[in-house]
Image 1 (cartoon, rainbow, N blue to C red):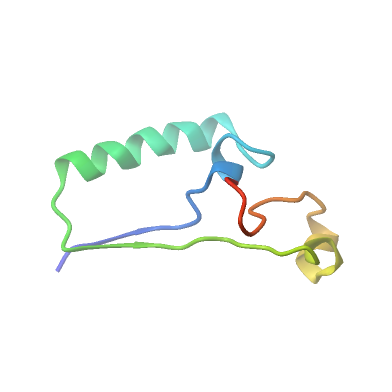
Image 2: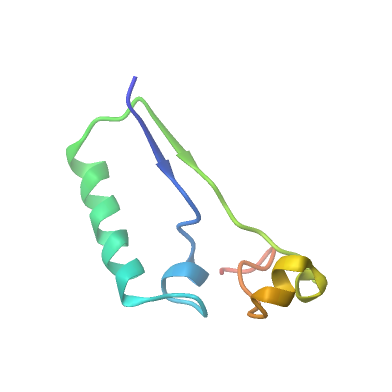
Length: 73
């Protein structure tokens, strides 16, 4: 069984506050993989934070609001 795992491919990591040109390039490559290779299963993870993110251990080390629940990010 071929499984593709895509980790946190979300707007905020690609074009949003934590986006980079490299992330945009990876986005195109993933689309190409999906078009050319058959997968039996595709698993996606989704980073999600709530209103208290900046008060968390991660939020204190990375004080950039991203992937806020119920937003396009």
